[in-house]
Image (cartoon, one colour):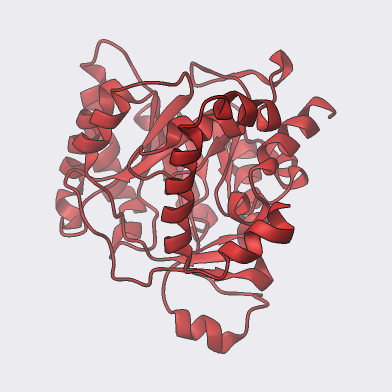
Length: 343
């Protein structure tokens, strides 16, 4: 029904318009009595065999909703009913910002992909923390943090520290986003010296907290092996807890969409099916490099249960979906969890 009727109708509208429309409808729909348990019955898969402990947290299953979908922690409670065991909110910056000019999100149906240049549009870390503080779900929540667009890279560590402190009491783990291609020069924060400054600052703050919360680093699929090695050395040096592999890519190789249409869209991060192979390749490399001791959240190009299994077999401890959820619908999470039970 989703791919035959609902998706074609939604795809008639601008992606960002659809996103807001769907969220509004879900909020209204879930306000109706008995809808919540009905949706859970349809999409959630409960089985102790799916449970796993990763960086000190117990996940009911290994499937999560990636950052960027619920930037402002506005509807994560409702999405818990679709079978996700965790959600990553954000990217949260210290001060709220509107992001890049519209249009800034584009579909590539022939490639089952998206290109976006949202630009960390969010309400700000404190507003997000306030929403999270209201609770209402047992789902694990991650906080994806970044710097404000106007903050120069040399001051980035303070922005990350500010967002980190604002969210600390209201999330279960953190993801340091230094790899989004839609913020000018942000990818340079993956350079060894820049990243060291950020991780050192966060590590120092965490050491003063009564409760230690996991910190992961989200990396780009466009890094070469030497750059990934540098990141892994810093993760080890500053006692970070894992890697999220990977963010979106700036490459446009091998797409089925007409080149003139790609050129018309312009800059932005590409997600979906075209990055599946590279994401998995990086997961496999990191797992082998670290002897399987470093937790990895695999994200990028998961549009089927087989895609998720591929990442888990490559060494990921958990997986996240975003673009796949848009193309395949809410049944994707259940399909992945059912496949895991029969593996």
